[in-house]
Image 1 (cartoon, helix red, strand yellow):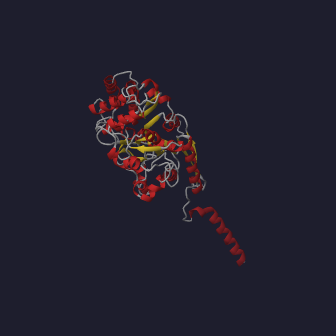
Image 2 (cartoon, one colour):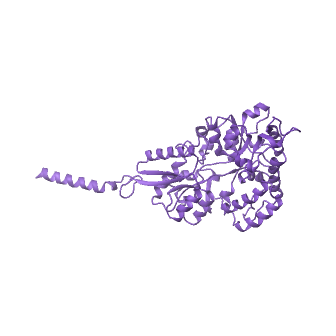
Image 3 (spheres, helix red, strand yellow):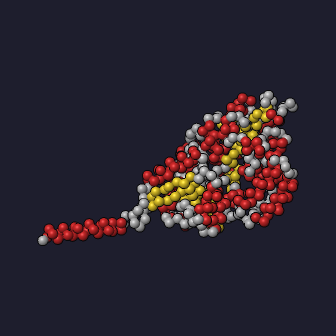
Length: 451
């Protein structure tokens, strides 16, 4: 009878453990109430190289988090159309890339998780580069940009060596003046007979190699406007300030690169040229102003390249710009989504920092020497990168308008359409700026808070 009682008691205990094992005090990890694996979707954009790197990161996360399964959704086409369609049909992913302007707009509408309340749970959220925070209300942010990115200059070293031309400076304090940029670009612009743009018999109709390429979008001209003491809007964000001497001087000087000095391609020519990496490699251009992210393809192209700071007017300036990473409020698994959010752009987990696409948002990767070497001590980051990118970001970068200005997407559309008429020489600068004041002014509703 005693043996039988023990056997029954043992059976009862076994059933109890089976039924209530999950309440033993151990963490259930990221499983749901039924003990099932949680599935998350992560939607993102990017080149094929970025897609491969992101999938590698997702696979690594899934392996190290067996209670969570992340499914990647790469969008190769029009990302904004895709995400707006998903928003309309209430089929949003859990975590996603998003344009910073749209991220803040949707945050104000409650469509994106506010990560401010999670900073005590994840102290790393409080240890990120200041410009990366996406505040939509005072003290409220939806997280950070996916990476840190700036505008800078890339160049083909061999072209400078062949012509005995001094390479552009990597330190902000040594940044070229605009006149120095012109003189150098003239020496590196060549026609079909090898004559340079500073020679009297140079033929501008048969240019084979341009000295420099400059984007016609705000990425190309805004750093110069800021350098010259101007800006797109006033401090309150309520008035357009491009029809000012500071901004007009910059616009005229960029226009002169194309039509007066013939050292830069026209916007139409730019559209027909290959990407910066190929243009440098094939010697279509000697220097190119582009985003730091171009480093990935440039480093992979095999060209002997260097990096430099942008030319300056008064103070050396660049802009900090990047897409956002967000968690949608519609997620059914906010804790698991946050776990993946913290993982997805951690330099320890994804190699897009080492390969050159991204710069980290974590402060320690700019202050800790060992951490800096982890992502820059490789062939993708030339020796001068420390000054031309890291120090340049920390000391000279201003948040881009897509992060800072309310209604930026609509404003930028108007700016691009208007200024294109000037860059293509279809209208005068005065006429374009006057028209922009009329079309942009009704859209101006201020700036987002900076903290």
